[in-house]
Image 1: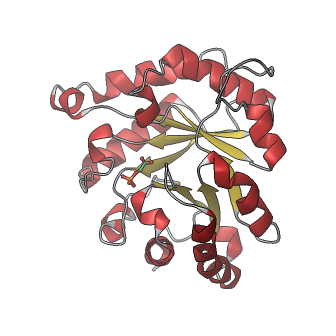
Image 2: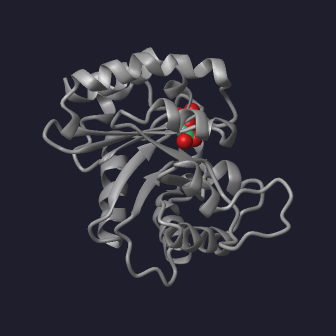
Length: 244
Ligand code: PGA
């Protein structure tokens, strides 16, 4: 894994405020000293922090992304919503789409597909999340579920070069559990086989405690990190350990 170009994407979820931005200073100085060519760091804060974060990280190699957006490419009367053009306008370069926490709120594959298309049109890069529930895993349905999410989510999208796939088993998110090494290796290989040339990340309880295990999975292109990314020391620790 040491010679690969790795993504570390921080998903702050509904956490953080203006004062929290100070915690990025540590990460910025760490990244400056690190061999930049090896890592790609992306922060996805809540929408309220995108602008100040873009400003703060302007002179660094760290990019900023949104955590979701409305499906409409056009502006419209959608109270409380933000579309992909607005994210782009704020300086975001990426957007997380299809996260299970939003699927749980009712987002279906068709809606996610529309969001991906409109975000590509706006010039954003996509972090497309897929993953199975524990029940589906127990029934050995993981591959079937992933194929379905991929086929529907990426329907009629020919150019997938700006789409990163984040495999996030729902049962692993925020639970402290991670998949078995052999299972994860197989699943990542399966996704890569399905979407040729795709970069595939893993997400779900990634932490300084389990990164030594996870980094052994040699077909991974990086990590989508929730809880542990909100504490700069933990985030830095994960990156350091990945390359040690
Ligand atoms: P977690 O979240 O690292 O806190 O499990 C990951 C995610 O939901 O993207």
